[in-house]
Image (cartoon, rainbow, N blue to C red):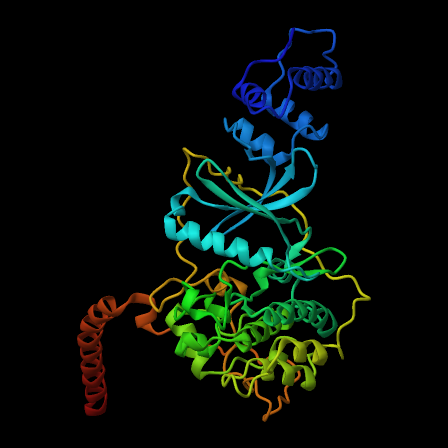
Length: 462
């Protein structure tokens, strides 16, 4: 007879099918034994201790335990058992799962029920078919797809490690050798995709996954399209992507997007890799779009003094605003980065740590998830994934010594100090408060002046 309390957690364990009665009893006995209570079989085991023991015994994962404690019992999609949560993007959530028969660990991208409109499902199906045609060492491979009720999902290979954005936010900018090693592999993946006629359209650090042994995988083909088949592309003519990495032609002439558009985005990603900064931080999507078309970013050496002139030249060539003057192929990028790429030193990885937040559950036929907004950009839309966090990545110092340019070298070896400025009254108090302050200050100043003049005249007269 079980001796533990039939709590919400225990009922959820049994209902989910993830834990048997025997496993619950064994975990409860182990908890009592460790606490010196083995002789008191009637002592109830709290669900926190029970859950912790089941995780320690590898019966459950931490994610599963948290979901079961909250009363969730649906932790599977078809034959896949959800074991963890990876993240959430504009078009869905991504989970880690295990095939119940093959015991292969995979990643599952789930289309939220709230977005399961006919158009969204058709777009998701297009992504699945596109990814299924690709097979390259540096691209995330698709394994399976399906739906559980009205929850649609795509199954891909699981890539351990972290994406480039998380890596740099945790450990800081990469050296030239490490950055070249990562971006060169991403360029190989893009070169392969371009040869298939495909443009990624959302190249950015968050979509470049790096394993602990330095293997790079380009992920998320949700916005990809065939650049020579605009008639069947539902996103043809639309500005799609992430604001911090949009090429000028995507903004000015989205119908003309081609593989060199991915080269520009990869150049922005290389800039981020060695500086830890997006090219144009802060501002709205409209501001970023204008700056991509009209301005040049700050010279990389202002943030990483070790970057060489030749490396800066490559970034500038990849980020040329005129697509005709830009590096023309991903193969060219691969060749030029070979000078610096070095896989010898281990790449830095984000420090592991337990999240303070509870990961979301998988959507079910009854559940919905929050709508995060379209990933397709417009001029009045809020910033994308990286642009929304640009300010938290650190503000840029005052007037730069030089902007990035192949024609004007930078002579400063360190970034200039930020200028010391005094906030104006308007910035502190606002226009209305300033107006009221002036209404009081001007008469008061006049009165004080008149009084001082009277004292001076009286002193002179005496």
